[in-house]
Length: 70
Image 1 (cartoon, rainbow, N blue to C red):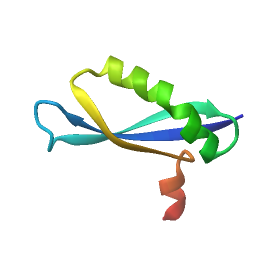
Image 2 (cartoon, one colour; image 1 turned 180 degrees about the horizontal axis):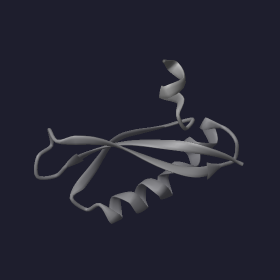
Image 3 (cartoon, helix red, strand yellow; image 1 turned 90 degrees about the horizontal axis):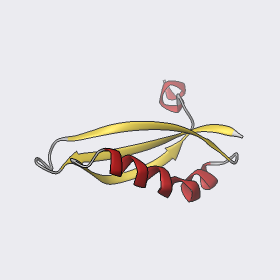
């Protein structure tokens, strides 16, 4: 199993222009594609725990991938 980064862009319900990126790390079956298939329950849990936000978009990536691009 590999650790993947589920990157969530969520906006405040009270101010849709106030958006923030959140990183949720979890164990995946080894590929970003499997992360995409496994992500919905994590997204639902996150949304339930953050009722003042709405998930606008999300994607999977490897942890620290942005650091590796530099």
